[in-house]
Length: 180
Image 1 (cartoon, rainbow, N blue to C red):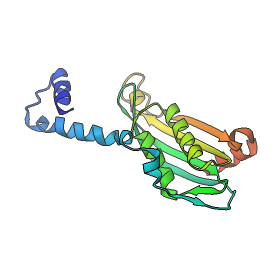
Image 2 (tube, helix red, strand yellow; image 1 turned 135 degrees about the horizontal axis):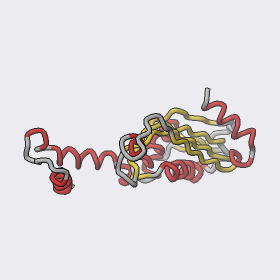
Image 3 (cartoon, rainbow, N blue to C red; image 1 turned 90 degrees about the vertical axis):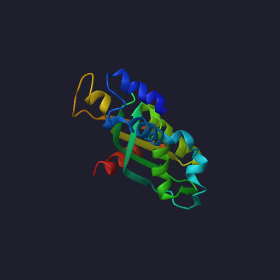
Image 4 (cartoon, rainbow, N blue to C red; image 1 turned 90 degrees about the horizontal axis):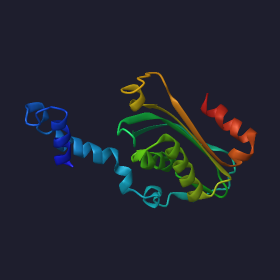
């Protein structure tokens, strides 16, 4: 990957041997691996058996989980926050695992629509709750730095599964709670 980053730098007209760029291909390769580390993770590894029996049937929400991802179309970052809720049905996830699931899928080349669904599906598959809701709000640098260059645009996506899809009151409760 270092060689390829060297070629990219040369293709834009820079001298990869100049002082400030000599180590850039190495640093860029390491950064790209880090930004895409989700490919080296599986859901089972991320959850690490942190699934617990619980008799609660009340909504669990983790909101404002920051996320960083790369747009698969331009390889530019999108940055935002994710809100996740589920209604347990005998099992709950360890709190940090929800954020880790978000991070695992975000740290892959993505489109926000798919990312939202992947997070919801992962939680559904992990604990079989009565429902899962995921909302992501993000700013896309591919839209801010190039193309249309709109600095204040925010993309919002949602996936609602189970009771969140079927029951407007459950969906409304979730949306009200994350918008406080």
